[in-house]
Image (cartoon, rainbow, N blue to C red; front, side, top):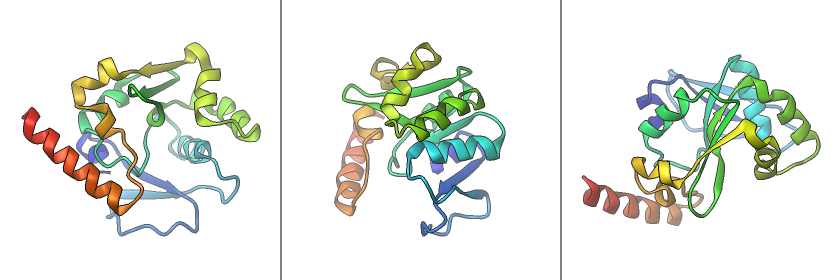
Length: 167
């Protein structure tokens, strides 16, 4: 959320109706996506429909994404732009335009994986790889999932160590 704010973007959190959320502040919209189905593309489709324009997506479990990277993604103008570290494609850190809604709906109906969806887009999806992401720090660190308190402690320690040695 901080990276989105610092990049100057309007921030919205998309979640299922029964997902408990912390107090987020008056400047953050909460958009409740449909209860079913359970698929990451449901939230993206919902955000595209509510916003009426392109969106930058950043999964909630990636707390160290740099605001400069978010701002760069916001400036992209393709149909879909996603990121990839050396170890994995990360479709939940990217920019999506409404032009992809029909393809998203088809992928949801076909229970296609996020990575399969991006692969099927072919040339309509731009991938920002580790060569470009390195300008924003170590992609393996800032794109890492933080799902538990132990993950958070490890990631925070690594992130702080990296920040000390790069500034």
